[in-house]
Image (cartoon, rainbow, N blue to C red; front, side, top):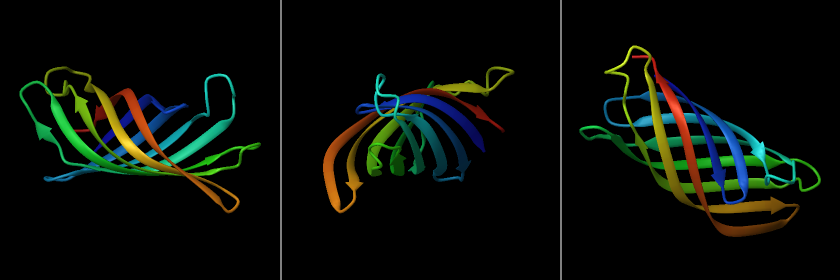
Amino acid sequence: MDISYGFGMQRMDFFHQLGLTLSTRCFNVEIQQAFGQRSAASGVLFSQTGLQCSYPFALKAVEFSPYLRLNYGRLALPFAFNYYRMELGQQLSLPLNRRHIFPLDPFLSSGIAQAWEQHNNAVHSFLDFSLYLGVRYAFD
């Protein structure tokens, strides 16, 4: 089991994200909760909950994990949008937990997503992206 913190950007949204990962022999499942804002200047609050499934490949010095992530968010007033995302991406992490006393593993993830914003009965669909930089703590 791992716990992670990441700071990231999705198109024009900035997030602080916490994640809890459960690992099996074949794949990882991560539950994510993020809080952020619509843009650096707007100050409009945004919460987002996500579920990510990934398949880790352990290489010599890094771990490569392609993932599928599903997110739901809610944008605060005055916008009051419901926000949905389906993202395919990859995460690279540097597993230091076997070589250091304090097991903090840095990671970088990025992906391409299809996103939908819903306000009243209008639904707007658009292509989205994300970029996260963070650390995870392994409870191994």
